[in-house]
Length: 435
Ligand code: XYL
Image 1 (tube, rainbow, N blue to C red):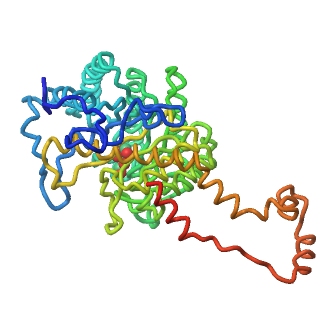
Image 2 (image 1 turned 30 degrees about the vertical axis):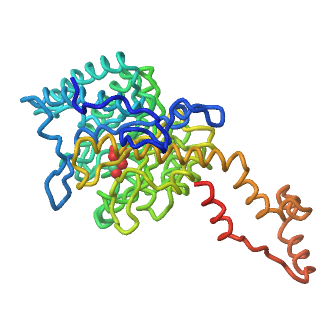
C-alpha cells in the first residue's frame, strides 16, 4: 500500500529544490565520532500523526487525511493506521516511535475489551517492527482523557480509579516488554490540584510515589526494565501539576528515594510554560544525572498554552544539542517530535514536511553544538568568568579551607573589589556566528 505516495527522504543539501529532501540531516554523516542518526535518535509521536485532526477548543478538525483512513470498524481503522504509521517512519527514515495506549487501539466497552484490542494491535506493530527494524522509544498510559481521571490517576481521590490506572500501567509495561521498549514515560496531566480547599497534597504525593514504586516492582518482576521517565509540565490541563518542572520533579523523586530509577523526559514547550528555557530544564536535569529523553517541539512565546509546534528555532535546538553533547548523548532516550501540525497545514504531505523541518533544525543544532564544543566556546567563557576561583583565595574556598571569620578578616583588608564585565552582548553575537 502507499498512503503518502513518496519515496524515502534523502539528504540533498541546501542546493536542492526538492521539498521532500533533507537539507541538513545526513543520517550517516559522522560528527564528534558518532553518526547523526546515533546522536539524534529521532522518534515520531503516534498521537499527533495518527490521532490529532487539527481541531482546537473552538473549531473542528482541518487535516485533509481523515477521509483516507480506511475501514468500517474501529479495529479496522486502528490497523490501517499502523500501516500508514510504519510507511511514514520509512519515508522519514526515522528509527523510533512513541505512543499512548489509547492512540493505537479503541477502548471498546470494557477494560478487558481494551486490553484485547491492545493485544491484537501490538501483535501487528510487533510484526511491522520485526520486518522494518523500527524501535519503540517509549510508550505510556493515557490517564488524563477519560472522565474517570478528572481528579487524577495516581493522585486521584478514588481508590477504584487508582486501581484502574494501575491496570493501564501494568498493561503498558507488558506491552513495553513485548515491543522491547527502551523507556517508559509517565506524564501526569491530571496529577495535581485545582484547589487546596479540598486537596490533601501530602496524601496525593504519597500515593503517587507508591504508584511509581509499584511500576518499578512490576517491571523487575517481569524482567523488563526500561528507563523510567517522568515528564514535567507546570499546568494544562490541571491548574497546578505536581511535576511542575525538572527541579520540582527531582525534589519529589529524591524525597521518595526514587531518583535512582527515574530520569526526566523534558519537553521544550513545557519548559516555556514553566517560565524556563529548554536548556535550563536540561541543565537542571543534568545536574541530577537525570537527563533522560526529549520531547522536541516549541511553544509560542506570545501565547500562554501548549501549542506543540514543530521545532524550527535554531538557537534553542543548538543549545539543546549542546546539553546532549555535554550529557554524553541522550541514549537510551531520544528526540521525539511531540509536535502537531498547525491547523492551517492541512495537507497530508505536511506530516512529512513538518518532520523534515524538525529533523533539519535539530541536525543544524547538532552541527553548531559540535563546533561550539570543538572550539571550547562555553568552556572558555566559564573559565574567564570564574577565574578568581583559580587564584589563591578561590582555591582555598573550594578546598573548604576558609570560614566566615577568615573570609571576614580578609574582606576587611581589601581596599577595592573589582568585578569584571560579562561582555554578554559580545558573546551572544559570537554565538550567532555558529548558527
Ligand atoms: C502533553 C504531553 C504528552 C506526553 C505524553 O502535553 O506532552 O503528550 O508527552 O503523555
